[in-house]
Image 1 (cartoon, helix red, strand yellow):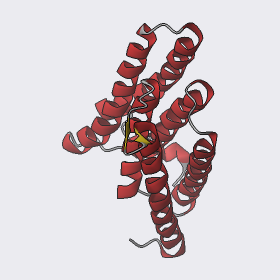
Image 2: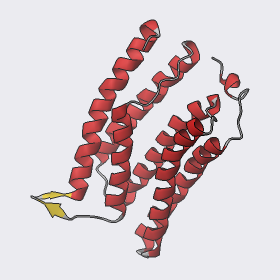
Image 3: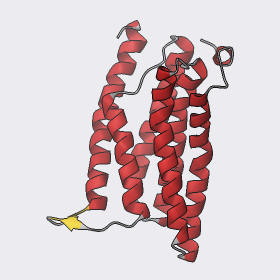
Length: 196
């Protein structure tokens, strides 16, 4: 499939609009994290949470509504995972810079997302395959949202010596590993024989 074919399908759908909202909201989330760190003003935390909620809800509802309203498009299938990765990387970059998010976890996530995008683009272009997110990938995305909340609010509450931040990082790394293995198996299988 050629990239131009993506735009031959419907473009202006509500689901695609939600995906674009996620892309637009992510830099503003980063900007407010920056402003909060520089000024210490608590109002910025409210803006951060509002934007984080918008990103999370748009991620959930764009695919759901696309199927419900029969608005599944080639553009949406291509743009949705890229929007997820863009929003996640932008948010994590600012959490690393201004909220003490662990750099090593950020590098792990960045490496996997880069490999996933490269593999997905190759399969999309050469094999006409659109690889769907797996279950662990969805859990990984949910845990990233939890990490965002924990670090934006600086939630250091602990239970049995484990803080909410540490627990959320553990979940992210766990589903990062499990999802990575699942994606690798799927990509290899698709590339070899294009079968489920």
